Amino acid sequence: MRSLLLALVGGLIATGGLLAAQWTAPGRIAAQAPAETGEKAAIGRIVRDYILANPEVLVEAMQELEKKRATQSDSVDQRAIKTYEAELLRDGDSPVVGNPNGDVAIVEFMDYQCGYCKRAFAAVETVMEADGNVRVIYKELPILGEASRIAAHAALASHKQGKYAAFHKALMEFKGPLNRARILEIAASVGIDVPRLEKNMEEPGLKQSIERNLALASALGVRGTPAFVIGKQFVPGAIDADALKKLIAEARASQ
Image (cartoon, rainbow, N blue to C red; front, side, top):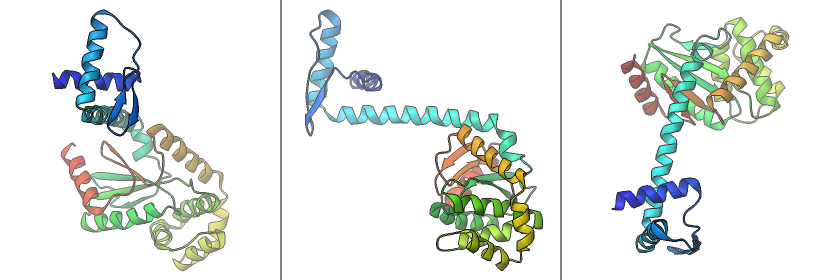
């Protein structure tokens, strides 16, 4: 009986038609259903009476609905990951650090002004140090203003000097706001030829690479940074080293 009513309530919540009921006080509802006849009205009275006696069923129904929506979202994410596998894993303009031949790839969408990205960077570094068979593919996603765009262009341009990993690390570990002068100063600190870097930053291909990343992020449902794709799983937000290791193990197990 309870499971049937829970399903009925969940369906009504999902369609926005919970017997036209309104909350009038914590834990209390007032029924405002229109007059009905026959079997439908009887079912409505049963559901209403049950909710009045057991208001926690509303919470349970909403939780079940959220679980169902999360499962559907996961399914969409996995289909998108499969659809865009080439763009995720084989875009030659996306810098790769760690083991370029690693059996598991961590794809990260990131922004150099994102505090959560800086927090996740330490976890990624820890995992790479502990696991020599992982490759990390960075997708520059400058969504936090002009300084983010400049930093992304500079980072991609540094790749032409073989300095991406060092520059990326220095930018992620830098504390404080970024601007063009500070970004170039950080570049010089890791041995980058700054005049050459500035020239390379103006190449149209860098802008096109970032635009592809933005389009890919949109297709995957990325709503912020950082965001990860590991194996078949899409993971939004910062995660710690233990969570990364678990996801890597799951990706290996599914190969």
